[in-house]
Image (cartoon, rainbow, N blue to C red; front, top):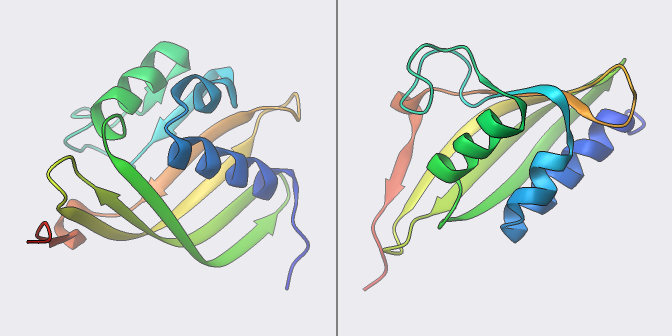
Length: 137
């Protein structure tokens, strides 16, 4: 198994912040010009497909996609290389009504030039591949 790099560690911190519902802590992991593309390309969260840029854009994405939900990540494979780390992951989002949206994805965390923040987090998945589970009775 490859040795974890800084992007691996920052990916862990990103996941911990999202799972804890720590919006400000999550935003603080990114460089001032950091980008979140989740999913990459045009989507329901980003109709133009340009990604969410800077604290304001990343915060708006958080409010639209994460806030009010319980998000869990299951890493299956991780590939650190250079200043990036690619991950094969299942993301499970429990919605306020108890139903779940589940998607398999590849996430890529890239370090910023300062070596202390993320330049980007890109998630490669398609809404067509999302699976849904009804709320428990």
